[in-house]
Amino acid sequence: MNEWTEIKATGRRELLDTMCAVMSMIDAQIQIEDYGDLDELMLDGVYGDLIDESVKNADREHASVSVYVPRERSAGEALSFVRERFSALGADVTVGAVGVSEEDWAETWKQYYHPIKVGRAVIVPAWENYDPEPGEITVTMDPGMAFGTGTHETTRLVIGLIDKYLKRGGRVLDLGCGSGILSICASKLGAGSCFAYDIDPTAVRIAGENARANGTDNVVCGVSDLLASVDKGGAYDLIVANIVADIILRMAGEVGDFLAPGGTLIVSGIIDERAHEVTDAFSALGYSVAEKVHENGWCAAALARR
Image (tube, rainbow, N blue to C red; front, side, top):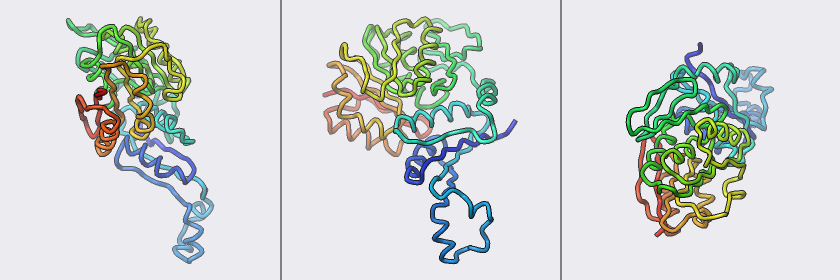
């Protein structure tokens, strides 16, 4: 087995900054392939005779950004994470695992995925058995091609905040639900109803399958581009959005229309460097920061309307 898996994103050159920003969420060390300026350099005589023929014939209109995931981490989780982030951003970017078929990593990474305890919740892989301790609730997950196993810092941070701020019997809205893990946790922690949305139909299908496998029949899954198709049958006591800072900022002015009086908005998928940018934007809209939590360079925040 390879010691490292290369996750590579490819898109038009004008998306390079976006690709770098998303891929750096997996690892700060990124590798960029961009030959857009090569013709100009060759015309100026810079390195012209030293450039390999294959490089001279490289695509000038597209660029690629790669990160390398060690085998003890889930390449599948990383791949699903960046795919969902690009999808949420509306960026036409192709992402794949170089030199490894998706069927291979979809199976091999499972050996590194074991039960994960987050507060009262224990996330258990569907292929493992687990005997819960008194007071624990178990969430059985098979993420398939969707993001959300509990191994990523952002998922754990949000689950911890859900456990703390969820109103028993309340309505929960999960934006960018991925595997459905957050809605299922909320349901098992006492939510009355959960509405889980994702722009990716595959993620919505997987979330529905996971909800049924957990017996959480109060979790309703649907396709929506952020808030566009969200059920407006009533306000939500808790809204969670584990997406990416740019998308959270984009919907900041609208999401409050869906939040019940006294409700809580939990946002994550935010790197520490951008945490103040997000919380400042919501403060300007009349929110107060009830709590911020951090882990390994990631931030999640619980926000309340003043």
